[in-house]
Length: 259
Ligand code: CIR
Image (cartoon, rainbow, N blue to C red):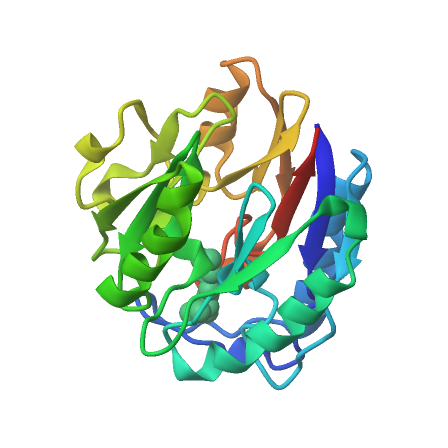
Protein backbone atom coordinates (compact mmCIF):
# COMPACT_ATOMS: atom_id res chain seq x y z
CA UNK A 1 0.00 0.00 0.00
CA UNK A 2 1.42 3.37 -1.00
CA UNK A 3 -0.28 6.66 -1.72
CA UNK A 4 0.17 10.36 -2.14
CA UNK A 5 2.75 12.33 -0.22
CA UNK A 6 2.46 16.04 0.56
CA UNK A 7 5.74 17.81 1.27
CA UNK A 8 7.16 21.34 1.21
CA UNK A 9 10.80 22.13 0.47
CA UNK A 10 12.68 23.68 3.41
CA UNK A 11 12.92 27.44 3.74
CA UNK A 12 16.40 29.00 3.45
CA UNK A 13 15.49 30.48 6.88
CA UNK A 14 15.07 27.01 8.48
CA UNK A 15 17.74 27.75 11.11
CA UNK A 16 15.47 30.44 12.60
CA UNK A 17 12.65 27.97 13.32
CA UNK A 18 10.94 27.63 16.68
CA UNK A 19 12.68 25.76 19.51
CA UNK A 20 11.00 24.72 22.76
CA UNK A 21 12.87 21.89 24.49
CA UNK A 22 16.39 21.88 23.02
CA UNK A 23 19.27 24.34 22.64
CA UNK A 24 19.79 26.00 19.25
CA UNK A 25 22.49 24.47 17.05
CA UNK A 26 22.81 26.25 13.69
CA UNK A 27 21.13 24.31 10.87
CA UNK A 28 22.70 24.36 7.39
CA UNK A 29 20.02 25.21 4.79
CA UNK A 30 21.93 23.64 1.87
CA UNK A 31 22.40 20.36 3.75
CA UNK A 32 18.76 20.50 4.86
CA UNK A 33 17.64 20.69 1.22
CA UNK A 34 19.84 17.70 0.33
CA UNK A 35 18.49 15.68 3.29
CA UNK A 36 14.91 16.65 2.39
CA UNK A 37 15.46 15.38 -1.16
CA UNK A 38 16.75 12.08 0.24
CA UNK A 39 13.66 11.78 2.44
CA UNK A 40 11.32 12.45 -0.49
CA UNK A 41 13.23 9.95 -2.66
CA UNK A 42 12.72 7.22 -0.03
CA UNK A 43 8.98 7.49 -0.70
CA UNK A 44 9.12 8.17 -4.45
CA UNK A 45 11.33 5.12 -5.06
CA UNK A 46 8.68 2.96 -3.35
CA UNK A 47 5.83 4.15 -5.51
CA UNK A 48 4.50 7.13 -3.61
CA UNK A 49 3.26 10.07 -5.69
CA UNK A 50 4.88 13.24 -4.41
CA UNK A 51 3.02 16.58 -4.35
CA UNK A 52 4.89 19.73 -3.36
CA UNK A 53 3.02 22.37 -1.40
CA UNK A 54 4.04 25.86 -2.57
CA UNK A 55 7.22 27.05 -0.85
CA UNK A 56 6.64 29.25 2.18
CA UNK A 57 10.11 30.67 2.66
CA UNK A 58 8.84 33.34 5.05
CA UNK A 59 7.95 30.51 7.48
CA UNK A 60 11.19 28.93 8.80
CA UNK A 61 9.25 25.85 10.00
CA UNK A 62 7.14 25.45 6.85
CA UNK A 63 8.91 22.19 5.90
CA UNK A 64 7.19 20.48 8.87
CA UNK A 65 3.94 20.10 6.92
CA UNK A 66 2.55 17.41 9.21
CA UNK A 67 1.63 20.13 11.66
CA UNK A 68 -0.74 21.84 9.18
CA UNK A 69 -3.16 19.05 8.26
CA UNK A 70 -4.14 15.60 9.56
CA UNK A 71 -5.85 12.96 7.41
CA UNK A 72 -8.56 10.72 8.83
CA UNK A 73 -9.69 8.42 6.01
CA UNK A 74 -10.88 10.91 3.35
CA UNK A 75 -11.23 13.76 5.82
CA UNK A 76 -8.45 16.38 5.88
CA UNK A 77 -8.48 18.42 9.07
CA UNK A 78 -6.64 21.70 8.55
CA UNK A 79 -5.09 22.56 11.88
CA UNK A 80 -4.84 25.74 13.91
CA UNK A 81 -1.12 25.91 14.75
CA UNK A 82 -0.34 26.65 18.35
CA UNK A 83 2.49 29.09 17.71
CA UNK A 84 1.96 32.43 15.95
CA UNK A 85 4.91 32.09 13.55
CA UNK A 86 3.34 29.01 11.96
CA UNK A 87 -0.28 30.13 11.52
CA UNK A 88 0.32 31.35 7.96
CA UNK A 89 1.36 27.88 6.79
CA UNK A 90 -2.09 26.30 6.61
CA UNK A 91 -3.48 28.30 3.64
CA UNK A 92 -0.96 26.87 1.15
CA UNK A 93 -1.47 23.36 2.55
CA UNK A 94 -5.21 23.72 1.93
CA UNK A 95 -4.52 24.91 -1.64
CA UNK A 96 -2.33 21.87 -2.27
CA UNK A 97 -5.08 19.56 -1.01
CA UNK A 98 -7.47 21.23 -3.44
CA UNK A 99 -5.10 20.41 -6.32
CA UNK A 100 -5.00 16.66 -5.54
CA UNK A 101 -6.84 14.28 -7.89
CA UNK A 102 -10.61 14.60 -7.38
CA UNK A 103 -11.01 10.80 -7.28
CA UNK A 104 -9.32 10.79 -3.87
CA UNK A 105 -12.60 12.29 -2.62
CA UNK A 106 -10.95 14.43 0.03
CA UNK A 107 -13.23 16.53 2.22
CA UNK A 108 -11.81 19.40 4.24
CA UNK A 109 -12.66 20.55 7.79
CA UNK A 110 -10.82 23.02 9.98
CA UNK A 111 -9.85 23.50 13.61
CA UNK A 112 -10.82 27.09 14.37
CA UNK A 113 -9.38 29.81 16.61
CA UNK A 114 -9.37 30.21 19.54
CA UNK A 115 -8.72 26.44 19.58
CA UNK A 116 -5.21 25.27 18.69
CA UNK A 117 -3.91 21.96 17.43
CA UNK A 118 -0.64 20.95 15.71
CA UNK A 119 -0.67 17.84 13.53
CA UNK A 120 2.44 16.53 15.26
CA UNK A 121 0.27 15.94 18.31
CA UNK A 122 -2.00 13.42 16.57
CA UNK A 123 -1.05 9.74 16.58
CA UNK A 124 -3.53 7.49 14.76
CA UNK A 125 -3.70 3.80 15.63
CA UNK A 126 -6.62 1.92 14.12
CA UNK A 127 -9.70 4.09 14.80
CA UNK A 128 -8.14 5.81 17.82
CA UNK A 129 -6.57 9.25 17.61
CA UNK A 130 -4.23 9.91 20.55
CA UNK A 131 -3.84 13.68 20.85
CA UNK A 132 -1.05 15.30 22.84
CA UNK A 133 -2.02 18.11 25.19
CA UNK A 134 1.05 20.32 24.70
CA UNK A 135 2.14 23.94 24.45
CA UNK A 136 0.77 23.78 20.87
CA UNK A 137 -2.44 21.81 21.26
CA UNK A 138 -5.04 22.94 23.81
CA UNK A 139 -8.24 21.51 25.24
CA UNK A 140 -10.37 23.57 22.83
CA UNK A 141 -8.47 22.20 19.83
CA UNK A 142 -8.83 18.63 21.10
CA UNK A 143 -12.56 19.13 21.73
CA UNK A 144 -13.06 20.44 18.18
CA UNK A 145 -11.19 17.45 16.76
CA UNK A 146 -13.33 15.07 18.82
CA UNK A 147 -16.44 16.82 17.50
CA UNK A 148 -15.31 16.13 13.92
CA UNK A 149 -14.11 12.57 14.47
CA UNK A 150 -16.46 10.91 16.93
CA UNK A 151 -19.46 11.01 14.52
CA UNK A 152 -17.17 9.27 12.00
CA UNK A 153 -16.43 6.36 14.33
CA UNK A 154 -13.14 7.54 15.75
CA UNK A 155 -12.20 7.62 19.42
CA UNK A 156 -10.17 10.61 20.61
CA UNK A 157 -7.85 10.13 23.61
CA UNK A 158 -6.06 13.15 25.10
CA UNK A 159 -2.50 12.41 26.26
CA UNK A 160 -0.48 14.64 28.61
CA UNK A 161 2.87 15.60 27.04
CA UNK A 162 5.32 17.80 28.96
CA UNK A 163 8.83 16.60 28.05
CA UNK A 164 8.87 17.01 24.26
CA UNK A 165 7.35 19.39 21.70
CA UNK A 166 4.66 17.14 20.27
CA UNK A 167 3.16 13.76 21.14
CA UNK A 168 4.88 12.30 18.07
CA UNK A 169 8.24 13.76 19.12
CA UNK A 170 8.09 11.09 21.85
CA UNK A 171 6.07 8.21 20.38
CA UNK A 172 4.96 6.85 17.02
CA UNK A 173 3.75 3.40 15.96
CA UNK A 174 5.10 0.48 13.97
CA UNK A 175 2.86 -0.78 11.15
CA UNK A 176 1.35 -3.41 13.50
CA UNK A 177 0.19 -0.68 15.89
CA UNK A 178 2.87 -1.21 18.56
CA UNK A 179 3.71 2.18 20.04
CA UNK A 180 7.43 2.92 20.18
CA UNK A 181 8.97 5.61 22.33
CA UNK A 182 11.98 6.65 24.34
CA UNK A 183 10.77 6.29 27.95
CA UNK A 184 12.74 9.21 29.51
CA UNK A 185 10.77 11.57 27.24
CA UNK A 186 7.30 10.13 27.79
CA UNK A 187 4.98 11.23 30.59
CA UNK A 188 3.01 7.96 30.82
CA UNK A 189 3.74 4.90 28.69
CA UNK A 190 0.82 2.94 30.20
CA UNK A 191 -1.69 4.89 28.09
CA UNK A 192 -0.78 2.78 25.07
CA UNK A 193 -2.01 -0.85 24.94
CA UNK A 194 1.18 -2.14 23.26
CA UNK A 195 4.39 -0.23 24.07
CA UNK A 196 7.96 -1.04 22.99
CA UNK A 197 10.79 1.06 24.44
CA UNK A 198 13.17 2.47 21.83
CA UNK A 199 16.83 2.60 22.91
CA UNK A 200 17.54 6.03 21.38
CA UNK A 201 15.81 9.39 21.33
CA UNK A 202 15.91 9.63 17.52
CA UNK A 203 14.64 6.07 17.19
CA UNK A 204 11.09 6.86 18.23
CA UNK A 205 9.84 8.30 14.95
CA UNK A 206 8.99 5.99 12.06
CA UNK A 207 6.76 6.35 9.03
CA UNK A 208 5.08 3.36 7.42
CA UNK A 209 6.26 3.17 3.80
CA UNK A 210 3.92 0.26 3.00
CA UNK A 211 4.74 -3.37 2.16
CA UNK A 212 6.48 -3.99 5.49
CA UNK A 213 8.91 -1.07 5.21
CA UNK A 214 9.45 1.90 7.48
CA UNK A 215 11.57 5.03 7.18
CA UNK A 216 13.38 6.49 10.18
CA UNK A 217 16.34 8.67 11.13
CA UNK A 218 19.83 7.29 10.51
CA UNK A 219 20.80 8.66 13.93
CA UNK A 220 19.34 5.65 15.82
CA UNK A 221 21.15 2.48 14.73
CA UNK A 222 20.15 0.36 17.75
CA UNK A 223 16.50 1.21 17.27
CA UNK A 224 16.79 0.36 13.56
CA UNK A 225 18.19 -3.07 14.53
CA UNK A 226 15.34 -3.62 16.97
CA UNK A 227 12.71 -2.95 14.28
CA UNK A 228 14.56 -5.01 11.66
CA UNK A 229 14.59 -7.93 14.12
CA UNK A 230 10.77 -7.71 14.09
CA UNK A 231 10.84 -8.41 10.35
CA UNK A 232 10.55 -4.83 9.10
CA UNK A 233 12.45 -3.50 6.08
CA UNK A 234 14.09 -0.47 7.72
CA UNK A 235 15.08 2.45 5.50
CA UNK A 236 17.19 5.09 7.24
CA UNK A 237 17.66 8.68 6.11
CA UNK A 238 19.87 11.43 7.55
CA UNK A 239 17.72 14.28 8.89
CA UNK A 240 20.17 15.97 11.26
CA UNK A 241 19.27 19.50 10.10
CA UNK A 242 15.60 18.93 10.92
CA UNK A 243 16.37 17.23 14.23
CA UNK A 244 18.19 20.45 15.23
CA UNK A 245 14.78 22.14 14.94
CA UNK A 246 12.89 19.45 16.94
CA UNK A 247 11.68 17.81 13.74
CA UNK A 248 11.64 14.13 12.80
CA UNK A 249 10.63 11.86 9.91
CA UNK A 250 6.90 12.13 10.61
CA UNK A 251 6.82 15.95 10.49
CA UNK A 252 8.25 16.24 6.99
CA UNK A 253 5.23 14.87 5.12
CA UNK A 254 1.53 14.13 5.16
CA UNK A 255 0.59 10.75 3.84
CA UNK A 256 -2.65 10.15 1.94
CA UNK A 257 -2.99 6.43 1.46
CA UNK A 258 -4.61 4.49 -1.32
CA UNK A 259 -5.01 0.76 -1.05
C1 CIR B 1 8.34 23.83 15.63
O1 CIR B 1 8.73 24.14 16.76
O2 CIR B 1 7.18 24.00 15.28
C2 CIR B 1 9.33 23.27 14.64
N1 CIR B 1 10.64 23.81 14.92
C3 CIR B 1 9.37 21.76 14.72
C4 CIR B 1 8.09 21.11 14.31
C5 CIR B 1 8.19 19.64 14.33
N2 CIR B 1 6.97 19.04 13.94
C6 CIR B 1 6.50 17.91 14.42
O3 CIR B 1 7.04 17.32 15.34
N3 CIR B 1 5.36 17.45 13.90
